[in-house]
Length: 205
Length: 205
Image 1: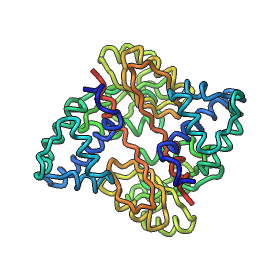
Image 2 (image 1 turned 90 degrees about the horizontal axis):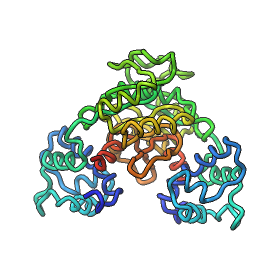
Image 3 (image 1 turned 90 degrees about the vertical axis):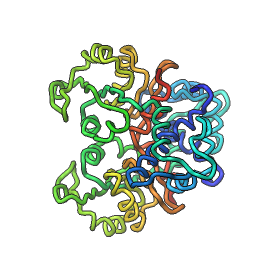
Image 4 (image 1 turned 180 degrees about the vertical axis):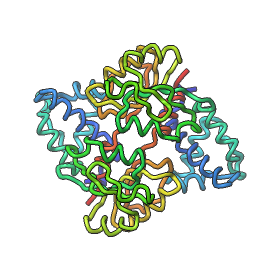
């Protein structure tokens, strides 16, 4: 299936899932591509087209059953389970991620935290004890962890990525402000607030 | 100019700028679309096409003068100056952002931090004193702040966005896991690690 569907469509599914979960939590049972589109600033035609890749999930004229569509999207995105995530970097950002409570009900659980600084190794952050970087390979392999978040300085990020990939990680969320070189079977997503700010200043007058 | 260039091209310019700055810091003086493309996993043709929107910046066969191209991109993106940024939310994430040192040399400076919690108002975070939310309008207007980052819980984000926009903000980086409704002259970028993780799990086997 993954070979037929444009990645840009896959990228919108988590946004739909988030909006649907919000609608459900607000007490709604049914929604429409128009309602979703209005909330998301996406055309209803686009939403129907995106969902049609997976069969459509709704009957013409009756809208979408929200809990059914949530279940289906969670299945498509493979988050109808809990993925263990390795976190590398126990600085300010790593700590904020370790404390973040928004992962668990959306398919993810941080399982371990690594750092190389003697001041941080052994430290307790939330429910975790920071492990040294030389335990990364063993821990990631033992737990069969496929997903990692990198929150280390830019100059350390490639080295950390190489370690993670060697240990079996195949999906990396990189907070370090630099591009990673990875093999074709590894996916990377980037979070760099400055890149997103600079994309907006272009339009400011 | 902004009306002729696809937003997806604008979105790649900060990535080019970041990679060029890295090349410069590594001591390079000249680069090529091939070198940049290899580092970024983008085709050299794409890079040349993107830059051609702005005149090209390079002569056929001689490559790009890195410092010149950096200057030009900073000018296009309007980050050849320092923008003051308002930060709303002084929790774990807000604190990490307040401590982050990667803003200043890339065009941004956090100027003020707001929170509504009595435990946080008046607290010192980095060099800032957390201000109450009811001072937001005055402070943002006085400083003529056009850019803000929202790091509050999802259920408070729309209300905070409305306040910011009313005070003159026209670009919002939203860390709250929800979509914002904003007028057409306001730009929003989103950072939600779970959305980016879910986009990758689809591909994991």
